[in-house]
Length: 62
Image (cartoon, rainbow, N blue to C red; front, side):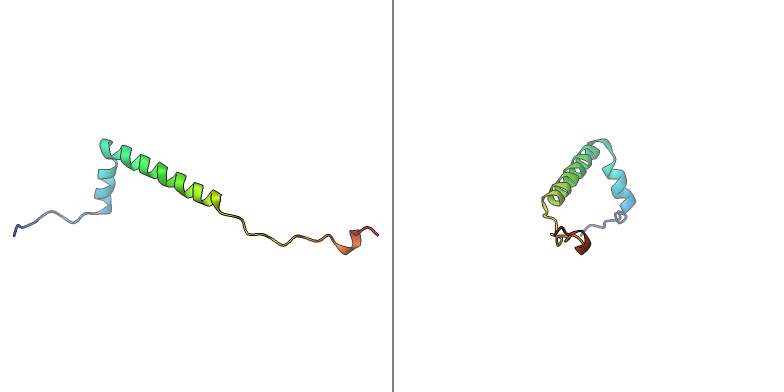
């Protein structure tokens, strides 16, 4: 067995890794793809049908 003395990974370390130049391109493209997929999914949802509003009884022509 080997002794692994590296500190546990933290969010700050992950953020630092993701903002270095080679990984930053991948993170940016992944985020762009995720935003596009979510907006495409949201746009493809059908809106809930609302009941049609009937005109008030006082304005109905005879």
